[in-house]
Amino acid sequence: MEKTSTFVSISQYQHLYRNDMKEKINQLLHEISQSVAASVEETEALRIKYLSKKGVIARLFDDFRLVPAEEKKQIGQMLNELKTRAQEHINALRERVQAGAASDAADELDLTRTAYPTRLGTRHPLSLVKQEICDIFARLGFSIADGPEIEDDWHVFSSMNFAEDHPARDMQDTFFIEYRPDVILRTHTSSVQSRVMEKTQPPIRVICPGRTYRNEAISYRAHCFFHQVEALYVDKNVSFADLRQVLLYFAQEMFGPDTKIRLRPSYFPFTEPSAEMDISCNICGGKGCNFCKHTGWVEILGCGMVDPNVLDNCGIDSKVYSGYALGMGIERITNLKYRVKDLRLFSENDLHFLEQFKSVH
Ligand SMILES: [Zn+2]
Image 1: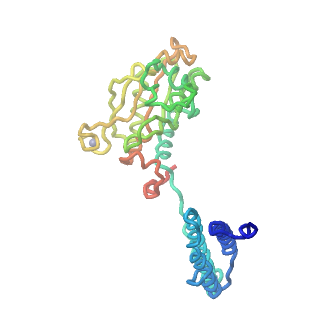
Image 2 (image 1 turned 120 degrees about the vertical axis):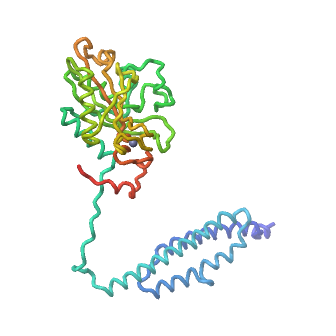
Image 3 (image 1 turned 90 degrees about the horizontal axis):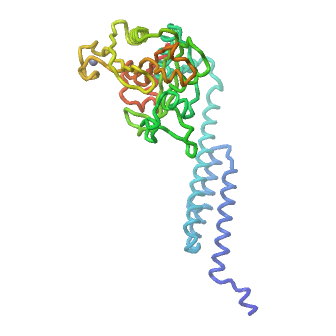
């Protein structure tokens, strides 16, 4: 009985060996990572010590056959890792030594060398177009208003005269926060109009540029986030004729003095009457081309007279005041100005695309 207690069975031996192997691998990992070399010869000596056919790591691979089957996978991975790390470390040491030798050979600092050309960034096309839209409206006396992207139902839908069962409230279109059905990502910048009207009495003349979100599958023509600019003017005796004049001014400033506009009746919950505006195709000049589907017109924005319910919801007396509102997608305007066919390009950060746009602002 005494003897059997000192006898080490094969499985016990393997167990001891296995732990010994793991320890060795870890020790070597540490040792190699700490190793340094001051010359090419020294890196070669390290390579021979660790990585040659008779080197330390090769010997471990020889011993690998003694590792019990159930541990082979783990220890095999550790061994391979050790070999890779050792190769990487020794290669890096060699490169450093060689680069040092090269820089010693040349002068340390060449003061006659030309400076590197400094690469200037460019503005994002959406920022350029947003700024241009804001500038045009600023010339008409509009100021910029801002609001939160995470909004509540009231400012996005209810105050804007969306009926309880309006499809825009549906999960299909709106990003809701789980367990908080009242908290949403704004689907349009009209929520900013709502906030401005709540706090300000007319005259109100604001534009609201910003990012908006909808639960859409991403494709070349739809994205889950996009950008809008909306304009709102509320005062006494504001008429549809005022709206039409502002639309014409905007279209001609944005797309050139020969641009024509046309209005088609439409429907939005927050305006009555509502219209959609087309401009004469800025590619064919209205003669008809593939871009405008041979109609000579392209749609660019929605607009209308602010629904009296919206004014009343926001604390403005609709018997005294009236107003107009208009809204456009910045992506849409950018597509028309720069012929960008795929919406996804705007958010892919591809420098080949972005560098084509030169900053003018
Ligand atoms: Zn055309």
